[in-house]
Figure 1 (cartoon, rainbow, N blue to C red):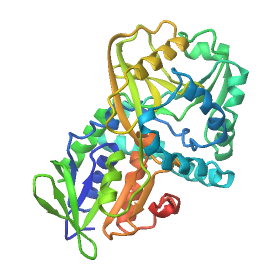
Figure 2: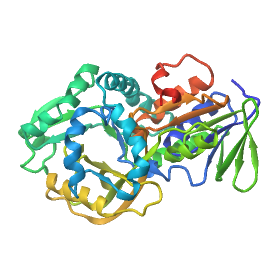
Figure 3: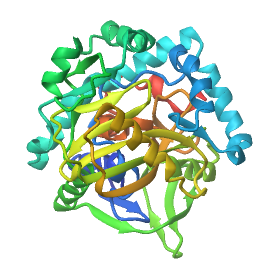
Figure 4: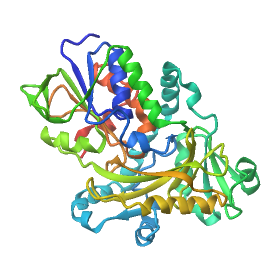
Length: 414
């Protein structure tokens, strides 16, 4: 198709970059807008995983059972700043409501519908970019210290079986063959063969953007300051005083989408789950598989720059200074699983995951302003779902039948 007015995509992370590329290929005149360079937010510091099995709602019973212990443990995987608790209360109430059994079943199905497409869609995009070799051939291993820890994660395994996601339970001997450096304390694991890793997630974004520009797309470094509307969206106003004409606007600025939505009179319950990682350039060991330890909620991923250790959830808002102890806790836990892991030539990073209380993203037309669309709230799965999200948003914006029913991801569900 060819649009008569420009299409503006706000947010140049992996979600926005992928959407901008898809729309440009469809014939839109697309400008991708961000105050920072493409891929410099959560897309820079994620755990480099196409985590197709990690779609389960965070409000499921097994998480509730462990949450009190996690919150009381200063080295636990969840931390909540006291100063942020009053603002978090409405979000947490919605999180509680998302734990009802019938709601959980709907959310599981919605997550699975996206994730069952994610690997194939990502591979197709990588082929287009000429970057197939950036995706690992090996999957991820979920680690369990003993039978009790494995049983505690039983609902995860049950969901994978129910939706047909590939997995295999292995014992300690088979685990050591795959990961010779693993601690003797880890007794079993689950192989997740389709949970692949990217060598460099930031490079993935920049290559998407390069392809977008090669097809005629425009990149604009600017800060959005508001919108103009009549019976539909007409323009995006910038902080420098300019107004950019728009026929279509896609809001996909991660957690910052919440502020944009408020300007349009359409508030959404979007919170930041602050995550930390440590990139270790000289780890002193080699890994072929990514590792995840569900009980401690951290991940170790081999990347082009060494080994990345990350995870943890910190609810502290957008403006609170980082607590770098959170990054060091995940490294400490990683060294429990990998005793020979060295922390040499390392950097630390903190970023903002856009989290909705029911875990499922918003992929939706605005309910109030024609011409406005939302793609946000992917939580821990932004990298995983970027290619799939781009395809679905292109179909939605061009009024084509989507390959996935988008009703579960509508903005009016809150």
